[in-house]
Length: 124
Length: 294
Image 1: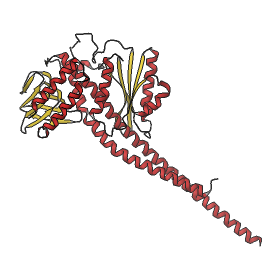
Image 2: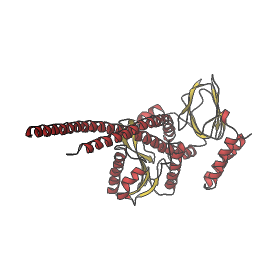
Image 3: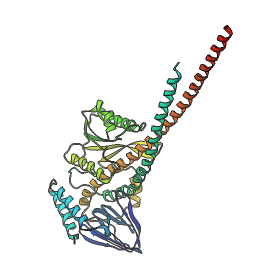
Image 4: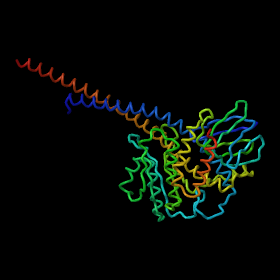
């Protein structure tokens, strides 16, 4: 078991102990078990699964994670409970990003496009 | 000497003013609780953010000499000062103390021949500054429509400023806001946000965390995303602290005003009763002396 903490700008969303956490890392999904090596990475839009006595699942839009000394820190924006995620919500977010992409420069454009693609994959 | 009628009117007007100040105090107290809660609940995020940046920036030196939010670009000619004030008055020294801190900074920078740009968040600060520094104020951000500060508000402001930074409009950015300590005490605070200010207590931190991190994708890519986010969160924090401080300041100002009003009512009532008695005594004397003369 290891400690985890999920914080958003508004509040601490969740904290507790977990046996495993699966995260949508920017370069692929990432499973964190106790005594994982120290890592810092950013997160793409997707679902986070936390395995502990109670299982949690929620959606993150963007953020960062840091694992060190058997502590996982998730710093994220746009967290939504899994039950509340539906196509309408995802489409709304996609539209927002499509709106932003017009005025963006080359570098941001590809970043935004990646985000849109990730969101589209979550549609069902 | 004012007539009895005049005195009565004055007591009445002080009393109605007191009603207003009392009501404002109640409203401020209710708003304060909410503002304080949101200010406190945002602290874990900004602390975590700081923690992340420290883990990354330790041992990191930028590979390119491009402008970046962590180290700036070694120039410090143009300073951008962001002032957070309220949209409404009647909150004691809230706006004037933080504006004074800003003015001191302006003086200091002017003595060093630096260029200054000012962004006012909130109308009251602009009102104080516009006579003296109107040519330096580049923008006034209106927060009147915002009832309770959300992350999106902070993001809008931050995006604008980050764009200015990369357009080369300024080199160093500092924010001025009232830090909420307690209801009776708000501390005007100056904080340098671009480049990210180095803390003095680096040594203690290094002892604790000299461990190695794996980065995905890479250090600089993460920093590139993290730093704007960190800047946004600093702005968000300042907005929240400032909102809580405003309500705190207003509450104590209105409390004082209500107390002064009741002192004033007491004095006026005493004076009113004395004059009333004097009038009665005078009338009695007139009647008695009139009767004696007959």
